[in-house]
Length: 173
Image (cartoon, rainbow, N blue to C red):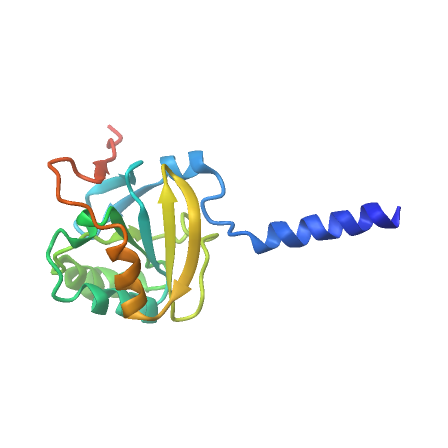
């Protein structure tokens, strides 16, 4: 009996240590976001990197890393930038944050309610990086180091192709 309890405790500890974000590949395939330009988007199977900002400090790290990069930098690296903006008061978001985001040359996929990213890995002030292979997480970590972000993205660099890594989500009629 004690052996079964020990096995159960070990199984629970292992499951808690594993990343819980995107645990269900099907759920990841069906997530829908809107960009800062109000364009509906969903994650496609060729996305290999998800950069996730859940607070202002992590947003600043990503913005600094992308400063001066070509407009299609994220596309060239099969990457997307997702931001949870649910903590921002709606009026501030609409009047100040969204107009500032629209000036960015890259897309920012917004989780306005916080529900789509609520179970994603988060660490105070750090960017979460999910590495994917056909919707399956192969690794996840957090960093506030711009050089580390550049290194991770450099490993996934692909030549630009006519195909886009963003799939417009169908709109409800």
